[in-house]
Length: 219
Image (cartoon, rainbow, N blue to C red; front, side, top):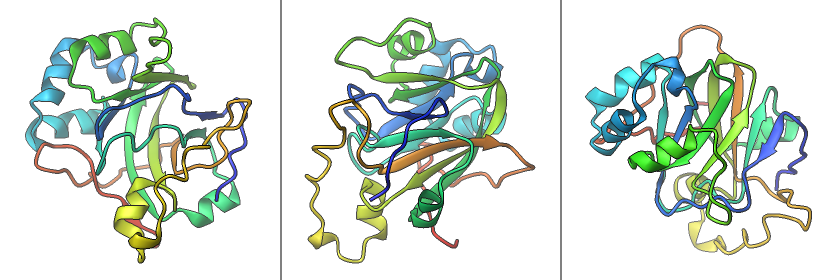
């Protein structure tokens, strides 16, 4: 189990974040400084193909992430700006890597991304609906970042793809993912932002153009 210390540069996902689906959109409040209309972008996400998503990825506008089931990032995800701790760095089982342009200094994680009203709300500066948060905004220094999403032993990704004994795993052990103060007691995923250094290989895309491949440790 990974400890989850909190600091100004380590932000846990909100306990009220809820994604009734397997897709999440990482973007920024300025949509990467692209000038795109959010209703146009949401329609592109809804009708996505690799040919329409690849230009958005290359510009750092957004990262559509697909998981194997609902609520993958809910409750036990940590945002980290900067370096991981040694235990975090040594114990991840899978990693996804790409880049994101955040010239506005506001990182956005949104459930889905194909509904215009949700995307418009997420980038508007208005708070999420209380008790039903489909997005979260994290303030970061304006920059274009390398984005690594790490999957740990308790993650859906690791349980399905990287676990040698899936029948021995208990999927109910996330019920107490937060302590009484609202801090996470375990971490299944870390979304890390770090300085972008050089070119990155384009991630693999599924038939809809969504990013889905987590590479195993050492690959």
